[in-house]
Length: 612
Ligand code: AGP
Figure 1 (cartoon, rainbow, N blue to C red):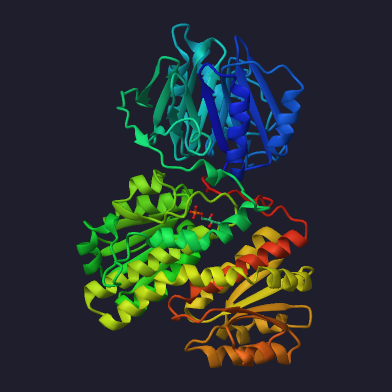
Figure 2 (tube, protein in one colour):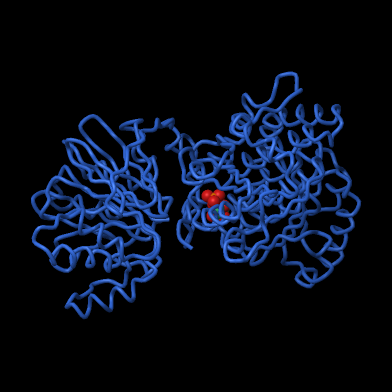
């Protein structure tokens, strides 16, 4: 949510900043801006995508070896040139880019108005810029970092900021609380960014800022302190990102590329974790906590959006195989409830980005309550990964499409391994069944490749339903969360209202929606619920609904009954979510494309939701 980039070195800063912003655009894309420090501060801002900013700046003089940039996802104040970042302080001494929310900005603003400050925008960030300038002008002796530090002590809320000061011509000052920031250490040059994507092509040496860290970056090095003015030691980490991951390759969109990557990413998720003879699952990151997990009286899985859907699948798997009670919570609810939680509980937090504000708040609450807290996360070095006691990386590679696809199947793969491992350790699964399932899991990539061959067929189905106003997704058992995920994919990228329902619940309300305009997408492979879901399909057909069924290959009965069918290879029901979701992702993709929607950057959304 909002992307920050900064550069300080010998090179021309503008191309580095603009390319960095393009890589960060998935975090927010309603406006963008950059500031260059070149003896004076030149600030350029534009509503719209980063290319609009680029075209705007290219027509003007844009010199500087030090600069900061920002791509915005609006919180305070709508998308506009004036609300775009960077924000200058009233006398132009400071310019600030900010990710996060200053919760007490209205009180601070009132105080600053009384002090004679005026404001050009509706943003909380401009309040921070003026607050910094207020402290700076109070005392002739004070330098930029001390003024920033004093201002941050007054701030309630979350921030990742990068600041330039017109009077201190060789510095970028960056600070974080809640919103992530990483510093790249190059050869005589430094980078600041919200995540490592703009940095990876220049250096693999990075320092992740911790909460309340302030970094003072200059050509001859950088120092860290915290807002309380205590020195902080540097911990340099090694990045492991492939540059190719940031390109669409031959695909029209990142989302399509990421859907197609799934056979490979699922394989990557279990690589080295499944013994070749299927006798063992090794989750290295959990070795030390596994004895506690084994004794857990309850497991609580927490996430948001797609990660929450993966959590629901985890609930079915863990309860079925390991027979441990599981609860699944929305992080945004859990963090504000007064949950009953203690030392005997295990809390699993799931997040692709590892930076979702609600999920991190849930993490802190679970830690306070003394539970064993573990993470399932995709982004290496993210806050979730660093602040959980132990965890499992999903290894899906960078996911750029705002609609999560490969991260979801990677999360489900981890949860499947987790459930089976726990079941085996607790002795709640027969060894034959265990080995059969591990073998099935290892065969998923091949089956996934087969499903992807239906792409053209799915495109034709999308043609038929692209003008729908509403859509209903139905599934039963472990495939109910898959129906939820299918509906989320459709609504977030095509803006068609879609609801996911447990098929058995349809008769309790949603059936009233069924008419000849409603596409009903039913996840109906052959499993224990098959006969029941066939009855649900009959009920929809009897009311003239259009059924698009996801069925096991060769299922003649449903191929005849449904209006359209997408076949998936036969699999053990516990593994079926990994397959059944792929056609739903493709269907949403093609419908969105046919409706002319921006698939990779859908309106109002951002990839990483680092505000409440
Ligand atoms: C999914 O397509 C989403 N755009 C969104 O629901 C996402 O899954 C959610 O914001 C959670 O993100 P996280 O996994 O990075 O925590």
